[in-house]
Picture 1 (cartoon, rainbow, N blue to C red):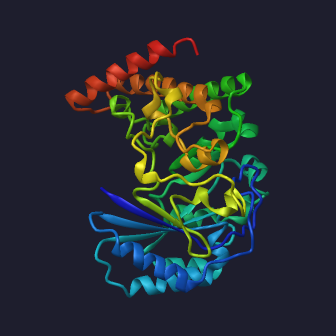
Picture 2: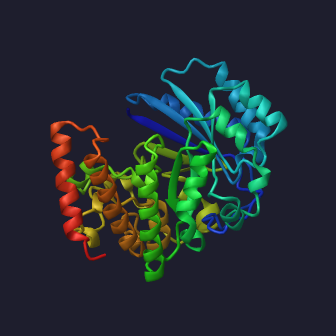
Length: 359
């Protein structure tokens, strides 16, 4: 399915101070309802050829602007859009109580995703002691198909398996991603990560009813795709981010609440980018399996394609763990693949295990 994503930063404010937040230049600025609706209308009208449009209501913490969300949602219900449109709010959950819950239950066209990092100890350490401020049952009961977003941070890496298993025990699917702008190259960090992945593999093998977290969702078929044009998100081509003032960016990581009010790095002409690969990764086997954030790359290096090399061994460890997990699933007859998919998967397993057996 071809999807266009419209990201609206409703506010730069947040009621938490998460340890890994990459938005270091927050202000009290907010987006007007008119700016939001005009942006939505403009980009939906420019979305011919897409199967769906997703409108992400973003922050800061978007529910600080609940009245704006309500007006957008109430307006959207009255529209007859030319293609399917999905509205999504990414929240820390602390404000989703009372009137907000009541309104969401009456507006099922608004989907909500929760950020939750694991056990109370881990979550509170990362996210301003906010675990008990979240009505977890509300999210489990009303958005069962929506994974929670767990951010992996260095200080809590040694409890990664406990954290993800805790989230599963609450009834959640889990999307886990690494904190950006952190040095992940420390040997002790890599050793801990490898150990935690092994624990998670054992957990998923023993609990086949649990949908594995995103750390074990490696798409092996990407391994052999053309690297030059392989991208990790809709950045620039299928995505637009609108800041509180209505200015447009290729993604939210280019906005001033991340880059600062006067970024020194000029934006390139992305329409002329013919190669999205990093030249330093040209000989890396798993380059196509290695996620990257073009906005953070640009902020740190001045080049959207220059990746954070401190993540290299972490990504290799992930790839190796995925091959071990996939091999065990195949051995247990729990993975059904077509002939061509099976052949490519087995080849990828062999190639990765041969290349990274010494990690």
